[in-house]
Image (cartoon, rainbow, N blue to C red; front, top):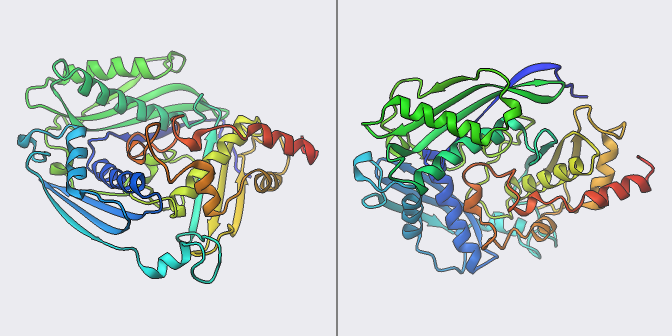
Length: 399
């Protein structure tokens, strides 16, 4: 049984939409959206690389959709805010290289219903996936990653909505938040680190004042109990950033994408993958399950793990850990409730969460910056199974 430390400081980081790896995640997911919106049965495994004025889009895509890969990539770059050739990466003069071919038939027969050794749609790969939830915030997310996201997201919003006032901000930035916990609950903000790409004429005092204002706006006042330690552009200068400063790749920010280092991670990245890939869809389902368990009051914290074999529909295992916060004495009993309330076959996950149909309410590109979890517009953030879990627990006399 996992233990809760009585008093400790935990730290998580986030990166903005202008971070080179996030540029790539957003391009890959924008291409996925474009394919699914025309052909919901598209198979997409799209990887992107970005460096000085070059974007390389590669991968395996089988689709009936008619997609202008280059246009999508450059539109993402433009939307993020890379529009100035002087910064070394710009939508106006970046080259785009396309290296795409169809999905391997060996993989296709394992994930296409009626093909291969099984009649049902199987998992797109082997592996284990995790989902996590905690009642320490209203979003049922760990506080450290939630507020790290909110800081860089708010800075990006200000940069885009008030460009004249914040002309000194450029798209690339990172944040880090350290919070003290007592008995499993966040009690005080200890340290904030922000590194933000900037124009040559920016004064450090401008950024420091802005970050302090943003922190006061996005982090609850009850957590700011004493003087917070700030490190703002601690090297003193951050003019060269984005893909010109560091090469970006799809799928490198998997901890930023999930729970900020809280709980476990199966290792699989999300962006650029269609929902037949359980790396993505089953991780979303595990979050859905864990969040509903916490919303039902069955635990204060919950981690759910599932595992699959490629081409096989049923999960090989389900494991639940409530870190000692569960109201049911044996966490293993929660597995019985999960199997009763949720179906974890890949095709059922896709249907339950509507993963083939991104649209106006949500799209995959939305997930590719500021976290895949913790924002209610995503279908895996619903808590509509909480009552069913409570009813099942009562039926089995577990509560």
